[in-house]
Image 1 (cartoon, rainbow, N blue to C red):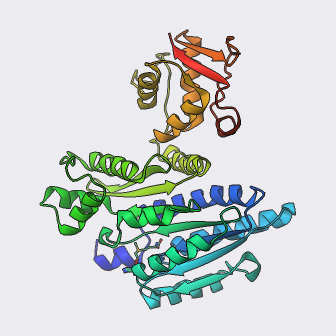
Image 2 (cartoon, protein in one colour):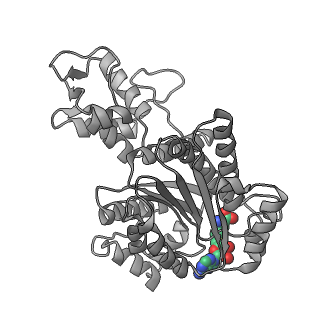
Amino acid sequence: MAKKDVKANLLNHSEAKVRLLGEYLKRYLNIICNDGYTKRIKIYDLFCGEGLYENGGEGSPLVALRQVKDIHFVNVAKSVSIPKIDCHFNDIDANKVEKVKQAVKDKTLYYPEFGEIEYATNDYQVEYDNLLTILPKLKTQTQKAFIFIDPYEYKHIKTNQIKNLMAKGNAEVLLWLPTQFMYRFSNNGTPEALKDFIEELELFKSWKPSNNVWDFVHQLKDGFQAFLGDKLFVDTFTIQKDVSTVFCLFFFTSHIKGFEKMLEAKWEIDTEQGKGWDYAGNQPSLFHDQKTNPLEEKLREYLKYGKRHNGEVYEFTLRQGFLPKHTNEILYNWQNNDRIEVITASGEKARKKSFYVAYNYFRDDNKKVSFKLK
Ligand SMILES: C[S@@+](CC[C@H](N)C(=O)[O-])C[C@H]1O[C@@H](n2cnc3c(N)ncnc32)[C@H](O)[C@@H]1O
């Protein structure tokens, strides 16, 4: 496809990309607006592009604003408290930013009562420096930031910058990386930018040439996780455009509940694309191949060395990129087949199907039951 088309039209893979942004923002805004203490949310789109493409496709600023508008009017209808939501759209190309402004106006996507809307035409580096002064000034309890980073080239991004943006615990980051290009480069002699990237992640010594782009993505994810430490959560979402092109979203948050919401958004899209969850337990049927389930394998390995509590199993599930409902299905199947013991804090056998693998129990009662393989 001609380069112009790639940039002037929102293509399928980009559509999936911004849909994921929309699905996530919907959940994120819904939780934050109703958490009872957040008064202001700031959305930053640092590489916002032109908003409306020639083929009518909507880019990240319009997708984000639609979510802001939706939640605002839902909150008005419910007469609940309505936090202000400020939006900041930046792109180095001033023409694109003008187009975004025009599209926002034409589609009446913004009303002043939502919060403040700002447009900027800065280089990413300037935006990053600005954020480093803005973020520490946000009031931790009542103000939150969400940062969307969607560059054409990974050379713009430094791992350390993500770490710094997350440092105050009040920001979440969605980062798109064109992993296919990185992967191709990684096998054809590593260019400086990728070398810097891997070096920053302190992966250079352990970096293995990957056999395919998925291995490459897993290595990067593990590298990010190790670099950022256990207090932060990292996950990925990959979109394959064609056999040789894969884009990957890296999602960073310091809050486990936000992480769960991101995973929900990801699974919703995965399921629609047919790649989603398919667990037949150990009931062979005509319709399911007898195949191993990756989470089941991981969970078995995790429980093999002694008992684990419901809070631990909840966190483990999310860190593997799965949802509590997936783990519940597996536990239920094991329980039915007498392969697991579920014991309450007072040492009794728990009621059937009572696993308490959920955020509320993780927060308030994380040792309510324990699991032990038989
Ligand atoms: C992948 S596109 C963004 C697409 C957009 N998020 C969307 O959903 O439609 C990357 C954008 O980065 C902008 N850009 C390139 N270099 C930049 C820089 N140094 N700082 C800020 N923006 C830059 C380009 O003009 C381009 O619009």
